[in-house]
Image (cartoon, rainbow, N blue to C red; front, side, top):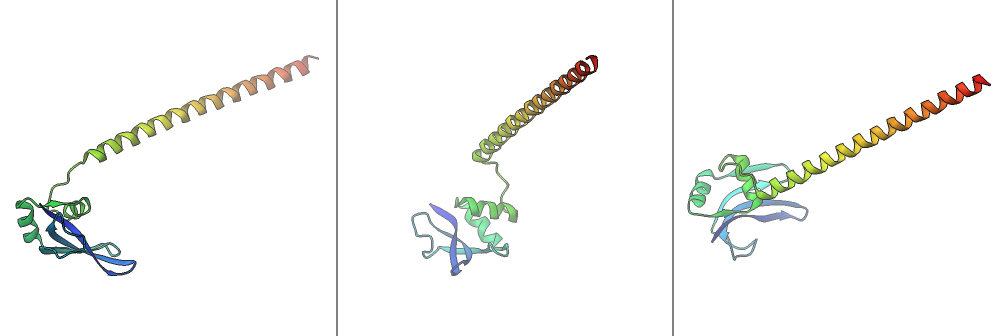
Length: 131
């Protein structure tokens, strides 16, 4: 199977990547079948060979997750919602709802404490004025 992946090059801590088509069993920095683009994560510079990429995608090449996002940003493929994103967003929404409920309960308990404290003070002041 042909994979579209990133091939690292450049200095230490100053990596740049080439977008390449290669066999799925080959090494990351091994010899590619074809170079299809360039990506620099520090400057966010991206250059894509759109015709060659469309050809490889039509032949059934599978992009990795990072390459898929680059192609989505470049407008070569439609954005897909992945199952992991759906699950993650559902968990985040559930956590937000729970934290909102906790905040409401804490606010109610503070109000109740403030009211009982005000009532006790009022009763104490009435008792002292009655004596």
